[in-house]
Image 1: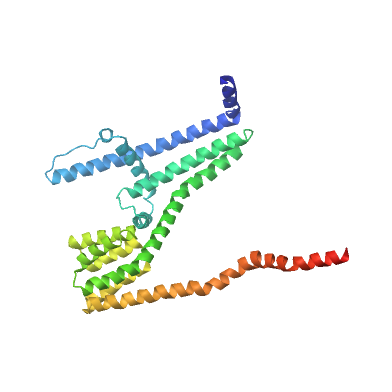
Image 2 (image 1 turned 30 degrees about the horizontal axis):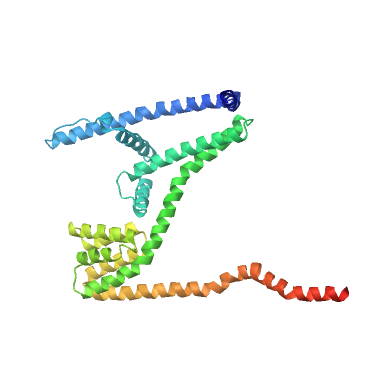
Amino acid sequence: MIDDILAAIADIFDSDSTLMFVVALALGASAIGLIVPHLLKSRLAVQRRMAADAKDGDAPVKAANPAAGGARERLESFVGGLAETAGQGDQSQTRVLRTKLIQAGYYDKRAVVWFFGMRLAGALLFAAVATLATLAVAPESGWTEISIFALVGLGLGFVAPSIVLDRRIDKLKQEHSGGFPDFMDLMVVCAQAGLSMEAAINRIAREIGVAFPSLARNLEFTAREIRSGKPLAKAIESLAVRLGIAEASSFSTLLQQSEELGSSLTQSLRTYSDDMRNKRLMKAEEKAYALPAKLVVPLTLFVFPVLLVVLMLPVVVSFSSANL
C-alpha cells in the first residue's frame, strides 16, 4: 500500500509540476522579500510615533513586542501591513469598505484588516485547491493549463469575501426595512407618552429585539451615543449610515428639519409614521398587482400543456378505438 501511495505521489509531481512548484516558491520568496521590509519599516514608524506620544503625555514608554503579544497580534500586524499597503492608493475605498462592514454588522476597528486577511487567505486557498484539483483530475496537464486554473481560483478566492459581505448587507437591509415602520409606530407612541428620545429608543430596542435583532442593536448604539452627549440629529444620522436604508436617511433629515424649524417633534413623527405605513401598503399592493403577470410564464409552460393533454387524450383514445 505504501508503494502505491508513493507511486501516486510520483505521478502527480512530474517534471511540469516540479517546475511549477519551483516557480511558485520563487515567486513567493520574491513577494515576501518585497513585503517584509515594508512591514518592518511601517512597524518601526508606528513604534516611534507611539513612543513620542507617550513621552509627550508623561506616560511610561513601552516598546511594542509582537512576539509577546502572541500569534494573534503578529498575524494582525502582518495583515494590517498588507491592508495599509493595499489601501495607500485610495483612502476613499477604505472608508467605503469600513462603511460596508459596519452595515454588515462588523463594528470592530480591526474589521477592515481582517477583511483584507480573508481576501488574501481566500485567494491562496482557492488557488491551491484549483491547482491540486487540476493535478488530480488531469495529471498530464501542462504548465499553461495549471496556471490558468490557478489564476481562476485566485480570482474567485479574492472576490468571494466581497460577495459574502454584499449578501449579508442585503439580508440585514431587508430586516431593517421590515422593522423600521414598526420602530416609527412605537416612536409615536413613546412620544405621546412623554418619554425622552433616549428612553424611547432604549424601550423600543428592547421591544423589537426578538423580531429584529440587528435593528435593535443599532438602536442601542444610538441611545448610547445620545447618552454620551452626541446631538440627536447627529446620532440619528449615524444610525442611518449604519442601517443603510432610505427610510432611516429620510428620518434623519426629518429630525434635522424639525430641530431647525422648531416644529413639534410628536407631530412630525406621527406624519412620517403615517407616510411609512402608506408606503408599506403601496408596496404590498404593487406586489399583488404584479402577481398575475408573473404567473403567466409558469402557467403557460407547466399548467396549460397538462390541461391540454388531459382534455385531448379521451378524444384521441375514442378516435383510435373507432378506427380499430
